[in-house]
Image 1: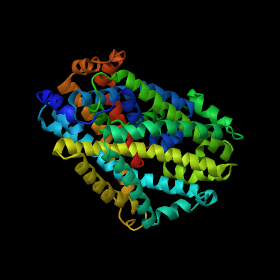
Image 2: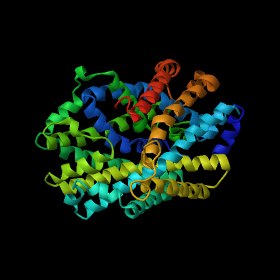
Image 3: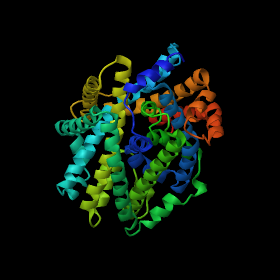
Image 4: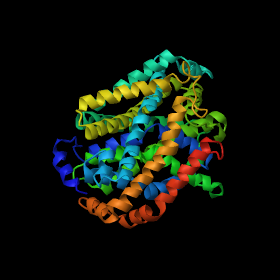
Length: 462
């Protein structure tokens, strides 16, 4: 508490967003990533289409909303990235641990995320070259990731694009790129969606995705939807703390959060409409043909495009869309890591970005080569990329969110959160926020943690 006044004095030299629009587009850019495009459609197809979508939307405006408001408000209140934000309320050892758990997550995710971004870049290049049939071959993807030199090359290019943008700072880098890329992403998503839903047989996929069938509602539908919110909203990655710390006091946090919810949900729905109807048309109405993760993005979807008229141009537009989504998310991960270095070690933006770049290349190379040169090394039966994904998404992120709840309920208090929000917002959902933070979010997070770990070890299947 004693550090808050000092934080206000230091904020004059801290990077800032130019206003609400810059903040909303930057957070939306962070939120709209590969999780929306390759994981959301798969889960929606598996758990009843419209039923999953409805459950997801309900959780978005309750469980997800409470965590977005919490992290953003704490960031603006303290003017710090996660470690500094936690330590602003005391030198308690548990606060230091909670802050560093939130801070270390983007440092671990950014390297392997840039590797996947490199895969996207490779496919985008192939579609530019007109290799529509080649990339649709059953073994193309496995041959590519088995070529360590090629994967490393595209990974480093993608990583350098990411960190060069971060080097330019908040307004000239993160915000400027987001203002260009997010409208572009929406336009590209609409183009691919229109093409997808107008294919013969695609309307069955549209109905399946948009119309709830409550006979398919189950506990696993709810658990899967809760887990997806972490992928979709940039929760528990330190990102919202950092971006919140760049906010001016006159920015309406609640209205901005609502706009982020709408933007992110809109893109998730467009992703479902891009992919589910197209795969339905391709597979004669079999939702089980949608796989999760890389196999959907880099094997199934190229096959679908190759089977369609105009598959080449549409494939190019689709992978350009995915590239934009990937780059905006990787920027937020690298920005959060650089901000932590600036806050905790007093480094300049340039030095912080260089250090983050080196970490990304070192750790990312393990993931990049994990399918080729380093494929003989596994950790609890996983290659490096899968292990880093497991440890962050299944373990650290739920724990990081629980640490945020602990910080609020034990050290900050709901009244101080409300007071900070109400500086610029009416806080219309204050009652809902207090109820979820006090009673339900912790339960949801524990369920996510247990089910995610159980899924990885094969006890249950998400």
